[in-house]
Image 1: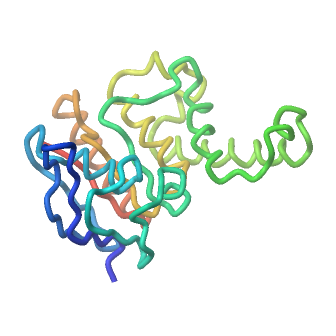
Image 2: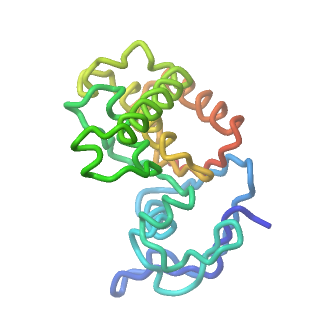
Length: 209
């Protein structure tokens, strides 16, 4: 059984047919690429899979479960985590705090518990900080943990965006043009990181030109 199975999916915007009758599958443990020019519907497909758009027609399944009508929070809870083409960071937060924000998808303490600093919320915060540091070590960003995200070089900002996604504990990580704006050396380093992520058991679907 495919990890992600897309069956006859179409996405129309009025008279514009961005996706037409797409059949597509991603197997567990793959790095699968979507390649094509601007306007080919690649990011639209990411938006459909992640629940930002509901498809005009067709169905798609994740680990055998029909997720066609799930919205973004539901798909993320199942383990479908994505990045965006534009870098989306909390630029005035530290690098560590950015990754900790990503951990909150699976946190179970309440808003008021966090506000009041209850023992349960403090324990979860310590766990999230430890997990975030492990991710930063893995991504080669640990030395920048106290730096503001806005001060990082472009390539490191891209890596931080992926670090935040990893904090969401993905089974399927969807990367929208992860090497955009990078020079050849930075691009090669990013592709090595992506291979390391796959080697941790995370399936990857990525967009490139």
